[in-house]
Amino acid sequence: MSLTLILIRHAKSDWGDPSLPDHDRPLNMRGLAAAPLIGGWLDANGFAPDSVLCSTARRTQETWSGIATQLSAAPAPVVLSRALFHAEPSDILQALRGCDGRKVAVIGHNPGIGALAWSLAATPPDHPSFGSYPTGACLVLEFQTATWAEITEGTGQLQGFVTPRDLSNQT
Image 1 (tube, rainbow, N blue to C red):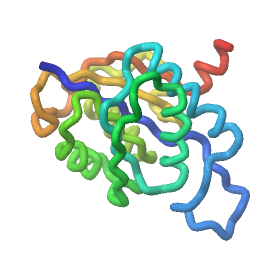
Image 2 (image 1 turned 135 degrees about the vertical axis):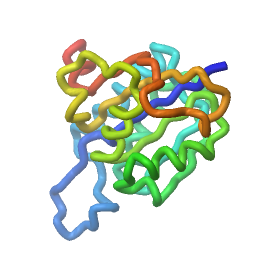
Image 3 (image 1 turned 30 degrees about the vertical axis):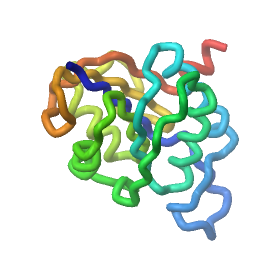
Image 4 (image 1 turned 45 degrees about the vertical axis):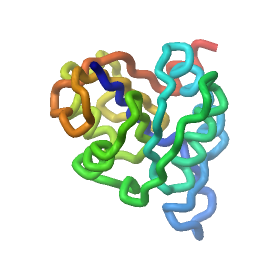
């Protein structure tokens, strides 16, 4: 039995209103356009999640909303977690271990989401942007394990990695 993990950094956010707390920043126009591109890629490749863990930040929730518009499967249940807001990799992994879905998407922030991607991948993708894990980046890993509590560093088999820029260059 295998598990699929989808690690998504929120799409590009708007810094236009300096009075907004960081947690409340929305996506900018580029981010609003990018999220559906990621959703379309996930759907086209059979990676639609059956469960979603999402930071409570506005930009992560808006990213999921944009992704979800492109998924042909029924909407996955979403668990919002304040603990994922600027979380360390260990905190993200702890939240993931409580999941029961087989294909789980985690939508969060750098540097935690990118660092977790690096630590879990058995072989990192040969992609020039993987090291910086840009906004909207999406990594899909498969684990040959029965529960999320059993996943360990360096055991995720690469299924795909894409950035919004990759997808916008295809149109």
